[in-house]
Length: 289
Image 1 (tube, helix red, strand yellow):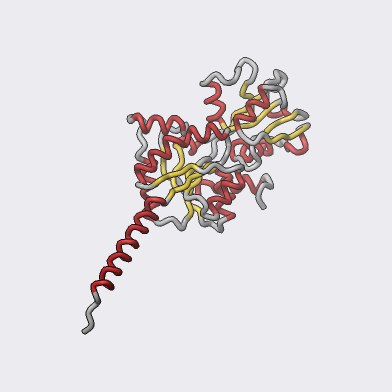
Image 2 (tube, rainbow, N blue to C red):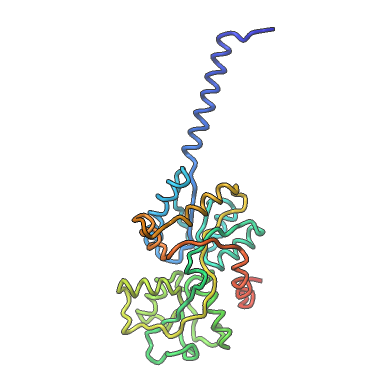
C-alpha cells in the first residue's frame, strides 16, 4: 500500500479548504432577484419594495435585490428567462408569462384584495357621467399589458357595447396608473381607466382634487395581482417564500409597514386557475391570439 506524502496530503487539504471557501463565497454572493411590472413611477416602486426586500432577506437567509424593468414585456421576459427569481404581476402579465414560458411559471400568493379587484373610470369633464358618455371622447388607459389599467376596463367596455378603437375619438396609453390620473387631471384626456387601489391611495393622500376629477364607473370584480416564480424553483424554496408572505402580520411594525406599502390587508395563497377568466377576457378583446 502506498501512502500519500505529507506534501500531497497538505495540497489536498489546501484544495479542500479552498473549495469550501469558494462554496461559502458563492453562497454569500447569491442574490435572490425580484421585479415588478412598472405600473407606477420608479421611485414609488422602489419605495414599496425596500422593506419587503429587507424582510425577505431575513426569511430566506440570502441577499435580495429589487431589479426594476423598463416595461411590462420586460417583466414577462425576465422571469420566463430566469433573469429574476420572482415577479409581481398583474393577472394579464401572469397569463402572458405563462404563455411565454410554456406554462413554466407558478403564482404563489396574492393580496386578499386581489380576489375581488376592480378598476375605475375617472373624468374631469362634467358632461361625462357614464360609460356611454365616453363615446367621441379621448380616453387614456395605462400600459397596454396592464390588467387593471387596460385589459379589464376594455373588456367591460366591450360588454357594454362600446368599442374603444371605434367609439372613442382617441385612445391613449399613459404607461402607468399615476400617469393616467395626471393626464385626466391636466385635461390632456377626457377620461381614464386605472387600478382602484392607486386611485384610492391618491385620494387618501390628497394628490388629486376630487371636486374636479371623479369616478364615473367602477368595474365588477376580477382576480388580479400576484407574486409569481418560475416552476424550476425547488419546492422547498417556494414553500419558504409562500410562508414568508403568509406570515406578514399587521400587528407587528414590520408587517404593517410592508402590508401598507403593498396596499394589502394580508397575503393569501393563489393558483393559476384563478387567472383563466383574465385569459378569456384577453382573448375576447383580441389582446392575445
